[in-house]
Amino acid sequence: MASASEAQKVLTGRTATHDDVEIVERLVQYAFRGGKQSAKSWTGEEHLVRGPRITIEELHKILDLSDQVILLAELGDGIESQLVGCIHVTQEGDHSHIGMLAVDPDVQSVGAGKFLMSWAERYALEQFESKEMVGEVVSGRPELMDWYMRLGYEQTGETAPFNPPGVTPLVEGLHFVKIRKRLAR
Image (cartoon, one colour):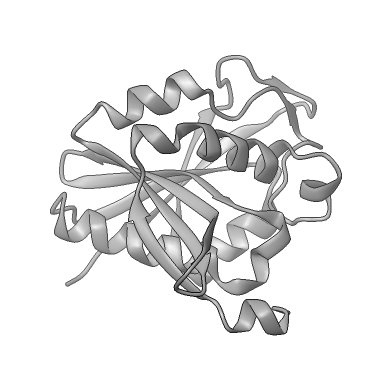
């Protein structure tokens, strides 16, 4: 549950710039591979994989492309704010792809994940004119898959190999499970 001071703060969003890559990289590593903090979080992956989730160089490359955006969620009181989450959206023809949804494990109870997903869907619909949102969930993450299902996503029945560069699986048989959601105006 959010503390009294967090309850008085508001989530706002903005798109990432090259000036944000270092703090975004730290947030993503902390959320996915942050050791003790992400271990207490239901979104941490350090029990499944070893290696960086994203690099600063990869973030710069994403931001150089016109068909991709990183959306940021900040929690603030109108004077100060802190980065609490991000999501990567890529236009792929008539659909958009979501990935790298990361929320600071220390503030997961403030709704940043739902805020980012809702914004990503609106952005894909309005800016990329996408009809559908697609993504992948690591097979060892049933609680995360359940969360996406509650947001209206469905499994497509398709899978993909889990082989991100520089990442070592710690669990045999990991793969991606593909998900999708129809977007409507």
